[in-house]
Amino acid sequence: MSKTPDFTKVMQDMMASFPVDASAFQNAFKSQAAMNEKLSKVALEAAEKSTEISAKWAKDTIAKFGDLSKAKTEPTDYTKAATDFASAAAEMAAENMAAFAEVAKKVQMETVELMLAAGKEMSEDATAAVKKATADVTTVAKKAAAAAK
Image 1 (tube, one colour):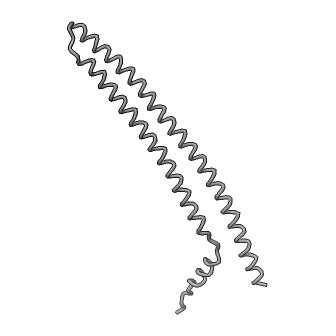
Image 2 (cartoon, one colour):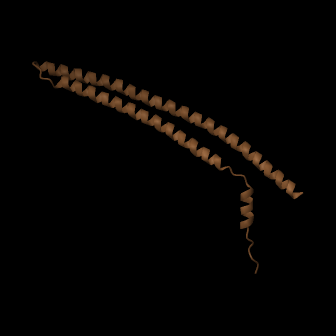
Image 3 (cartoon, rainbow, N blue to C red):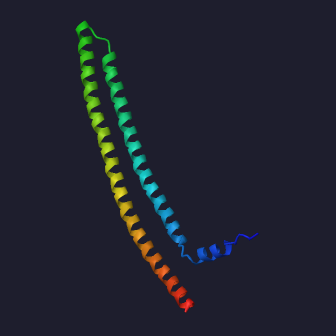
C-alpha cells in the first residue's frame, strides 16, 4: 500500500519564503486604535453637550413651574399663567430641539471627516504595502530564478 506524501516541509518552506510584513498588521492596529479614539472623542463631546442642553431645559422648565405655582388673586390669572407656561414650554422645546439638532449635525460632520481621512490613510497604506510586497516578491523570484540556473 502506498504511503501518502508528507507535504508539511514543502508548505513550511513555501510559507517561509513568502514575504509577510508583520509591521503592516501593527500599523493597521495602531491606525484603528487612533480612529476609535477620535470617534469616541466625538461621541463623548456630543453626550456632554446633550447633557448640558437637557440640564438647562429642565432648569428653565422648573423655573417656569415656579411662576405657574404661585398663588393668584383672580381665577383668570390661573388661566393666564397656564397659557404663559404652555407658550414658554413650546418656545423652550423649539429652542432645545434646534440645539440638539446642531449637536447631531456636528457629530455627523465630524464623523464623515474622520471616515474620509481614514479612507485616504488606508488607501495610502494599502498602496505602500502593495509596492513593498511587489518588490519583495520580485526579489524572491529573482533569487529563485538565479538558483534554478
